[in-house]
Image (cartoon, rainbow, N blue to C red; front, top):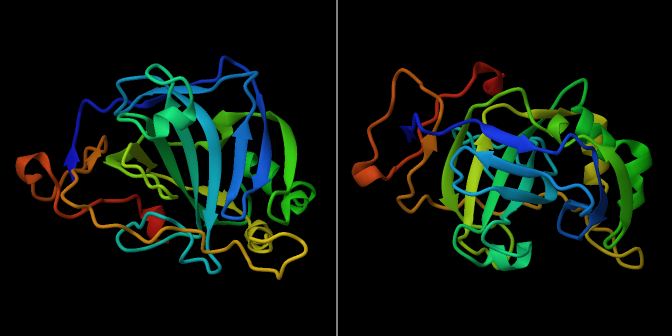
Length: 253
């Protein structure tokens, strides 16, 4: 992994508005799809273009140490929030962008269990909301959401070019992994684990462990805006062989 001093902080543009959206049980994951009335865009970081928020997905495990699609020093977390954005400057919609070069940016935030929860996640995971999407194809409308609240208090991240984690797994994604987690309570995680992959008429099968196995780097270069003092070996030909990431101490507590 290499330090890139030209990686700027992520810029979030909500237009000063709160947003609404519909939360779905897709059978594969929890999905919050934003309405089109108020648009949320991001820029900066590794992005050349502005990208528009399309969807927020939650991945989580049946146990605390197996719920994230990324690992940190070989360690998985209880879950992972993924904010999925498409390049609205080059493409007319998400579907077109997802299969096209420079199409998607996904911001990934680890979820960690604590006594109190992130205020945005609390809106999604409180009992009155989460019980409305117990079964596949269930949906529930949420309003008055402040997207800024989902972000942890950090401007540090790592980034690499990779693929989507759900079929057809197009390699059109720039991933951005934030350097701090967001928190949810143990009860909220338990509520997620009670969501079913199936319809009410079918046998219950928990949505837990809805994660893609970790993939090899295949010589991709990992960049960061974290100016750590002791770097690993430079990427040969600007490509990393192995992820070496100095993390904040809270991650391993």
